[in-house]
Image (cartoon, rainbow, N blue to C red; front, side, top):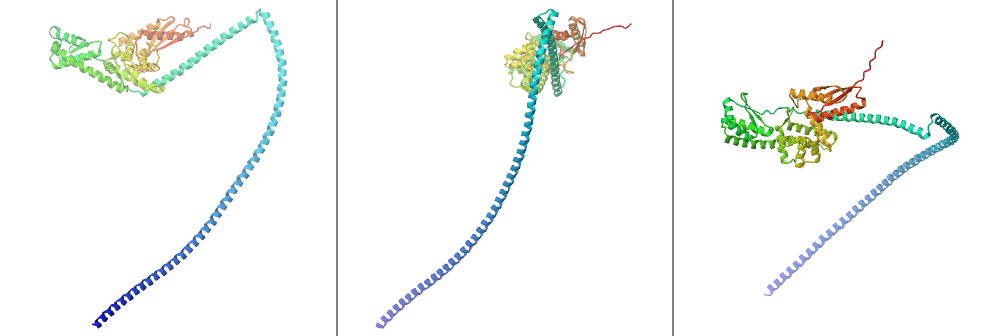
Length: 525
């Protein structure tokens, strides 16, 4: 029993000793490992320190080398700049020395001039004294001559002065008159050349087809039987047609044709279309006539307005009163010497713009003046007065500018010209009307116009003969040299032109050329 207890105790003691030895060994191993780590760390630290010292030493050496190189470079730059400054200073010194030499030479020159001026002044003083002596001698001589002249002519000084002033005045007046006439002729020639250049440029820049045509107010009738139906029993159909349309229908013996006559071109057009529809329809009686005429009138009214809008758009004239579009459309059915008035107005608008652009004026306003210049012709058969006055009233009524109103009213010279655009409209109107093929007139009217032109010229005193030439575009007037002198030729030509303007109607313009000839005949025997 005791032995077992002892053995147990020994086992426990041995176990405890084993544990103690194990723990001590563990601590010893840990201590040795930590020591090894510390030694390794110290060694690495020493190596890092050595490496840092070597690197810092290398950086120090590099810095010293760079500093020395920078010092050398800056020293060289300084020496270079110093050399340049020294060169500039030497150059400045040379310039100053040269300037001093120039100044010295100028001083010497000025001294010489001063001496020359002093000598000149002395000569001038001597000359003034000599001139004074001569003036006194001249005054004495003039006084003696004046006294002698007054004694010979028995005139006082005032009378002689008045006579001299009168002669000088006549001479000056004649010279002034000649100068004024010369300047007037030069200005007129320059203005004529400039105007001719602008007009020629305008004509060349604007090219349009000829618009000359005739409005034919006739309707073809397919047969005599249809002509009888148009007339109706005892003429009731034709009377109903005339009442509905407001036109005169002329039915004569001409086969296959019915003529429609009316001063209103739109009304005439409505009648022509209505009659054509009735002939095509075949049902001709008063009720059908009124129905067709009302329908056609509405169509023509719409077409007239559309034509006016298209014309304004073509001429690039905007913001017109709605009634003005209708008036422009009515011009499409109106002709003047065979020329369609609406196409003529569009041409005038374009021509006005071209001339306005050449003169630096407002082209848009010039187009507006040109397009509306004949607007009065749309209603001149309904309202009393000439178309310029009627057109001006319409332009005022529908809110147009005063430039447009004046151009409409005065483009034929009927009123006072207050706008710069009015002469442009007059020139463009003449260009459009007088270009070849634009207008036509009958032979009878043409001959009558030439005769009237010659009659007007022959009615002036001093006119021997006159000849209308160039299709009535010019008239040559031969005057009696004993009755008309050179100063009156211009006035007589102007008076003839004014009378032609007032008494005749013609497209474009008429040139009046007055000829005066003096012939001297003598015989040697």
